Structures are given as C-alpha cells and as structure tokens.
Image (tube, rainbow, N blue to C red):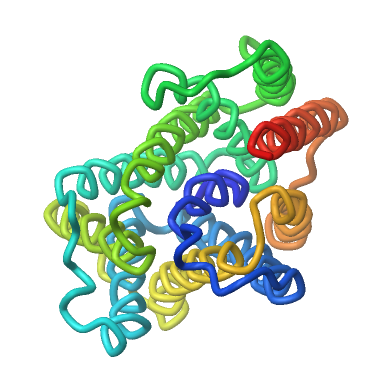
Length: 308
C-alpha cells in the first residue's frame, strides 16, 4: 500500500528504537530517506497501472508475497528463524491486519483517484495518530497540537471537497486508509519496545501474504504479458525495499530531521501522475496540500520540543 511516506515515517520510526540506533549520521539518514522517497511513488504508479487490468485482491496478493520474499532474502540469513519470534504475536498480527486493511482501501482508490491527490490525502494520518494517542496511549495533547490537527483536516476537506464533483467518491477510501494506518501506527508504538524492526517488518509482510493468499483464488486473473508479471512482482519489491530504507534512515536520525524530506513524495507522485496518466492537481488541491504539510510539520516540531 501504500499511503503517504509521512504516514509510513510516523509508523516505522518507532520500530528503530534508541537501542538499535548505531549513532547519529545525518548524511546517511538523508541518503536512505531520499531513496525511500524516490521508491514509493513508483510503487503507487505501478499499482495504478495494474488497476486497469487486475482486481485489487490480485495486486495486493502479489504485493505482499513479493514483499515477504524480499524480507526473507534481506533478514533471514542474519537472524535465522528467530526473525519470526515475537514477544506479542497477537499484537503483531493485529497491527499487520490494520496495514492490510489500509492497503486494500488505498489500492482500490488508486483506480479512481489521481496519484498525487491520493498521496496528499494520505498525509492526514499523522493527525489521526495525534488524536488516537490520547485514549490508546494515554499521551497528553495540548491545544496547539489540537489546533494543528483541526487545521490539517480542514486542509484535507479542501482537497476532497465532499459534495462536489471535484473528486471521485472512492477518494473516501483514502481517508479510511489514513484511519487504519493511524491505528497501525499506535500499535506499532506499543510493539516497538519489545520486538526488533526486522521482526516487525517481516510479520507485516507474512500476515499480508497469508491473508491475501486465502482470498486471491476467488479473484484470480492469470497475467497475460511479461509487463504485467513484472509490475506485479516489482510493486511489492519496491514497496518492501522502501520500507527497509525508512527503517535504516531512522537508525541514523530523528523523525523531526527526516519528516520534511518525506513530503518530497508529493513531488514524485505529481511528476509520475502527469507523465504516466496526464494528471495534475488543481489550485484548490495545492491550497489544501500546503495546509496539510504545514500542520504536519508543526505537530512534528511540537513533539520534538516536548521531548527535549
């Protein structure tokens, strides 16, 4: 799936705990984050291309299976079978199912919503995390961050413009994606203190692969061309590698340093949307985008300030 990179950043940043970080190295962190920023728009573009010929269930299955294979190649030689050992398997399964739900909604929406617009709406996930952190994590959220959350959702409404013909109704699925991803991030915070990042990422791919494998026979469509086979395989590989680069980035720098880089995904999504699909966001979409990015950066700034 893939929602916006900032959403992924907020969820995955907690998987690289302080005990795992080898030390601050802004140059390495920036390099890894730039690689992730470059990869995720390509994955989403491939998914959008595949939606012309395939049901979302087929694409999701291929995405998670290839992601799981990549995780095995990357981590199994180093960790052995302890890679799958989790201190809280129920929690790992639950958070992975939430991510799968987000993937289902996002991949379905990409068949109807412009690439850049879907990415922009996905950036509302950090606001949802801020709101949910109160009842689920017992965190304190002051009026400044509540104000940023409110303004961020206003920005999302400007992009979506409900009740008008500005966007296809399927754009609402991207909002559901952001909600699922927000919950996923909350549970990722809970699991990050006890399970290593490699285990968490592999569980995510494993649960998604198993669940989608149980469903895909009912939606099976045999690929007819080499291009379709390539896209089905590459989408998951690119997404999995992008997740890996995000984790590596947070081993060398804090979220507050990397978050502004993450918004570069909008640039990639806009360029690919125009080149491949002839899509360009309108003026109101850019107004909403500016509000969303500004509020997201402010929330990150406040979290950093309160943590010091």
